[in-house]
Amino acid sequence: MKRERLIKKYPNRRLYDTELSRYITVADVRSLVMTGITIKVLDTANETDITRAILLQIMLEEESGGEPLFSANMLAQIIRFYGGTFQGMFARYLETSLELFAKQQQDMTQAWTDNPFEAMSRLTQKNVEMWADLQQDFMRAAGFSFGAKRKPKDDDPA
Image 1 (cartoon, rainbow, N blue to C red):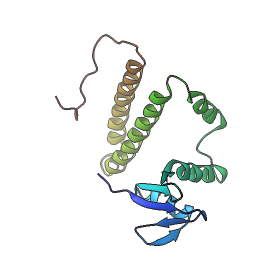
Image 2 (image 1 turned 90 degrees about the vertical axis):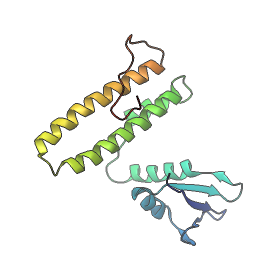
Image 3 (image 1 turned 135 degrees about the vertical axis):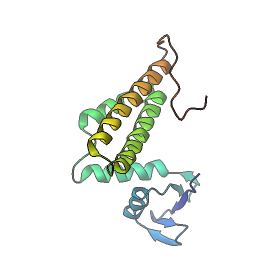
C-alpha cells in the first residue's frame, strides 16, 4: 500500500508539505497528483481532512482554463445523483470505470510495442468484456437479476 503524502493547510491558507518541510502551492499539489503520489491534506485549525476540497479546487482550476473535461450536461447529470438512492452506487461505478480506463491505458502503452493491430483487437475485446461485467455488477447492485451468475475473471480467486 502506498504511503500518503501529508500536506497541512494553515489558517493563512498556505499549504505545507511535511515530507519536504516547506510551503507549496496548489500547483505543486497538482504536480504530486499527476505523478501518482497519494496525498492527504489536513486543515491545521481543526485537523479536518480537506483532501477532497483541495482536489476539487484543482479540478475547478483545470476546468476553467484550456479544454474542459466535463461538459455542462455531464456535470448536470452528476449533480442529479447527489442525495438520490443511487449516489453511493454511482460513485463506485465512476471510480471503477476510471480505474479500468487507467489500467487499459497502461496496458495499451505496454502492448503498443507488439503488433499494433493485434494489440488493438485484444484490447477492444477485453474492453467489451470488462464493460459488460461492470454493467451487470451495477445492475445487480441495483436489484436487477440476470439469472446466471457472473463468470469469474481470470484474476478472480476460484
